[in-house]
Image (cartoon, rainbow, N blue to C red; front, side, top):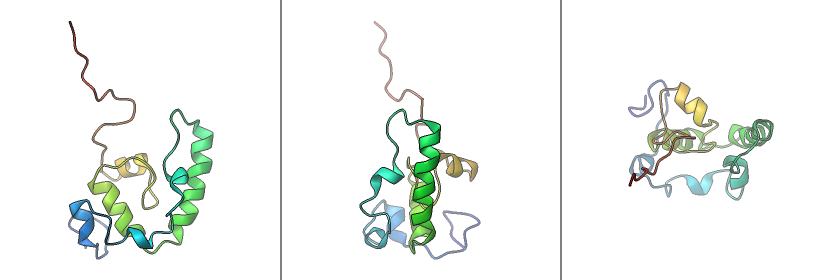
Amino acid sequence: MSDMCPGIDIDIDHSILNGTLDGWSHLAKCKGYARLFFGKRAERPQARVRREGKAHELCQVCTVQPNCRAFARNNHEYGFWGDENEESRHDAGFTLSSPIGVRVTPIAYL
């Protein structure tokens, strides 16, 4: 069982823990389909559901899905990774560094 992703019984390519994708990304089915995995700014909810549905179809047949999911969880990624979106990762206990809608740049008061 993976130390980094409790409850997932897989052998993870440890290159993901160092933040490198070289170990598995060249095998990913999503190469060239970034528009399916990362939404446009101010994307409508219905469009997101359709986009993520198409991404889900690719993830279902991808052999590196567990590594992709672990990478996103451990690196607090945005987007659809390893058949999970941000909400799915949050529900699994993996939160984003800066949640969507939260200002990340401090406001300077004069």
